[in-house]
Each structure stands twice: as C-alpha cells, then as structure tokens.
Length: 140
Image (cartoon, rainbow, N blue to C red; front, top):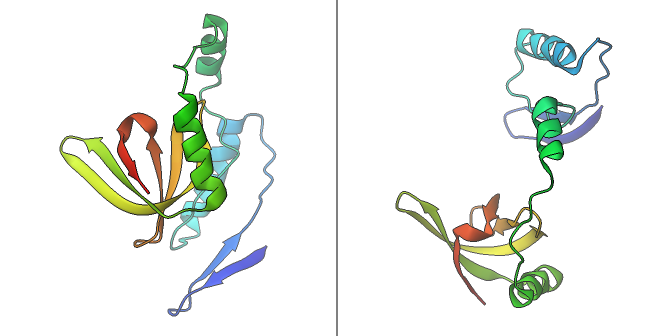
C-alpha cells in the first residue's frame, strides 16, 4: 500500500493492488465488491481488472474493423502542437441539449482513433474527456 494523499479532515487515500483467486473475472469482481461494501469505506474506485463484454468484443472483431473517418492533417498537427507546448487555450464545447462550455484549458492527451481529447480545465482544476465532434472551436 502506498499513502497517496491526506486531507484536512483526517481522511487518507491509498492506492492498492488486490489479487483474488476465482474461476471467472465476474466472480472475483463480485467478491471484491462484497468486501469493499462491507468495510464501509468512505469511497472507492476500481480502475482496472474489469473484463466485461468479452462476447460483445468477440462479435465486433468477427464483424471486421470499423474504419474511422480520417482526421485532417492540419487539425491533428494543431492539437499535437498544443500538447507539446503545453499551451493555454480556450475550447468551446457543445455537449448537446443546450449545454455549452467555454473552458480555459490545456490539452493533456489526444487519441485520434477514438477522436477523444483529454483537457485540463485550469480554473476548476478538473480533467475532462471530450470527443472531437463536441468541439465547436479552439482559441489560442
């Protein structure tokens, strides 16, 4: 166990790896959740090890690869430039249903295959994941 963070109210945050022997991933997950819920922790987050949807993945693989729309070279290089220079930019995001965000941020990561941007909002100190089709504009 590694002590990661402490707060003013005496709470502590730990990062742990737990090995559970079980016949399937689902049964192991059920055992882990049972133990965590019975321990009455303030909160917990499982970050890896979940292997759900195997049959769905197999069916999708048999159906063949999907071909994403090609990303324009200019936009790709512009986004990668923001990441390399760690430049502060403003991004206008349209989340749909009338929800619009204008956030001062830094681009942390870019996944061209998923067309997903990871943005760090400098005012709120939060990280957002945004799809490229949700972005209206970048402002330098």
